[in-house]
Amino acid sequence: MKHERLTVAQATIRFLQNQYVKRDGKENTFIKGIWGIFGHGNVAGLSQALHQYPEMPYYLTRNEQAMTHTAIAYAKAKFRMEAFACTSSVGPGSTNMITGAATATINRIPLLLLPSDIFARRNPGPVLQQLEYPLSQDVSVNDAFKPVSKYWDRINRPDQLSWSLLEAMRVLTSPAETGTATICLPQDVQTEAYDYPLSLFEKRVWTIPRQKPDESLFSEAVTLIKQAKKPFIIAGGGVLYSEATEQLGNFASATGIPAAETQAGKSSLPFDHPQNLGSIGATGTLAANEAATDADLIILIGTRLSDFTTSSKSQFQNPDVRFIHINVCSMDAHKLSALPLEGDAKVTILALQAALADYHISEEYSSAIRELRSQWIAELDRVTNLTDYDQLQQPNVLKAVNDAAGKSSVVVGAAGSLPGDLHKLWKSYEPGGYHLEYGYSCMGYEIAGGLGVKMARPDKEVVVMVGDGSYLMLSSELATAVQEGIKITVILLNNHGYGSIGSLSQSVGSEGFGTNYRFRENQNGQLSGETLPTDFVMNAKSYGVNVHSVESYEQLDEALAKAMKADTTQVIVVPVDKVQRVPGYSSWWDVPVAEVSANDGVKQARKQYEEAKKKQRNFF
View 1 (cartoon, rainbow, N blue to C red):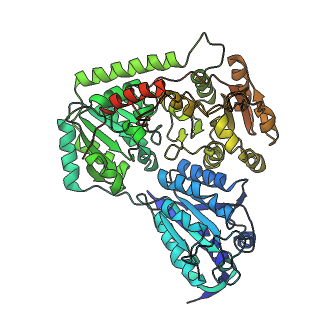
View 2: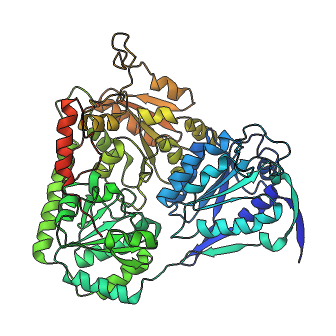
View 3: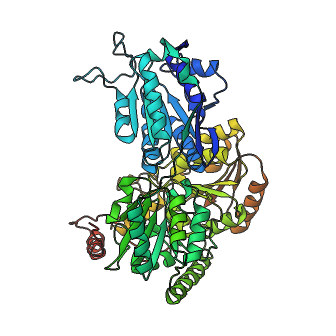
């Protein structure tokens, strides 16, 4: 067997260059590049290796958390068929990626992290940025990645690397197990050489399987659907990752079964599909939530059933409701005591359509669905055309952006009030046209995520929707957009604080405490003074991007028209009313209210909470 003497870092890059994935006969390289910031922990290791092997693209970022967001967004936009790796220096550089690790794992998105670590040989320790743990010398801050990684390892000897890389790739390319794979690389070990077998660096193809469900369980599911009077589909992210949107649309049309979409699953059906009732759950639409409330059979496809999807287990009120769950992940497939069809969404939907060739919902149910959809379209028009207000209204702004971006655009968001409003109001027409990170709802994801989406889909107009609170947390990737020549359009909505949590604070009787960007008053010691004079226009301009400031809908339309024609990143700063909210529709979200309080508002909120909680169900 032939060998080549390489450092651990060099071997890592050589290996990653030759990893491929294949599905449905289509093959492509899996790791498309490495994002990183170099420090003393990796400058002589992975930095040297990347310099030596320029075939592996390297991207410089401004923040370690941001680069994980970009990598996650890219992989999500590619329906998990391509991914990035991220490297950081030892200490804070590494721990800055922990949030990203959690984001990827919770959202079931492949992300390879290569955080640097302390010396494996120990004798220089304690080294700069080392955590001293008195019970073991084999613990570092990188152990904090363990609970948020689907695979974790530390390479203390060069000969361990091969096995760790192979196991990481197995996890990253698994439809059921994918998430964050973390391989910690001590700074001394990165530079150590070993005679690696050349076979390790040969082209390796990882086939993404399309698993079929158990035949007996499948037959039972077909029977349940035929017996149901009001079946209802909930499409999750698994529909998109399986690239099963066409099959879902055909199945819904053939059977007449209505469908709703989760945050991760939105854009599984085009907005104008007759069976599309919109979004489901706590951020759901009038049509979808009312249909789900009465449904006697819920067909779940590729969703992890978060509390927002189920309205904290209160959405499904039919006393005889049953669940069928198509999912590659066994844990998800068994939730809500569902009949578990552990299988790929695409092949399972095709099999269901074949087995239900002569099936269609009743005309009575079809008529009710058409009426619900008609009511929702009318409500959508009402909510996005608010008049008689002095300030710009966020729903109106979303409609203007949606119209200007066009049917082939991609909207990106993550946190605050925007995910709820976008889930209800945004009209998506193409698979992947709606990109919300709502598994972790991580503030700061938006701009970095927009870069990842644009890199994955350069032919699309990518619109990033971000509130002022999230923007202030992580706006630095505008500089990366300039550096890489990536064009995104950022809509910065300024309501001078945390609009979403301010609204939630009011709903639990806390009067928006601590959610406004204001000076501290000397008289009462509270943050209740004048609004902070943050100049977002000047801030954005400092990164080198083009900025538009608008004060009216007419100016907004003009700015959007210019932004869509531009070929460089644009930021549009829009002041919006913090009070205006899109209504909720037959839904609830379980946010516990203080059981005792001297505040009358809290007491009233507690009464409402206890009443709402009565609809919460246990599905054993």
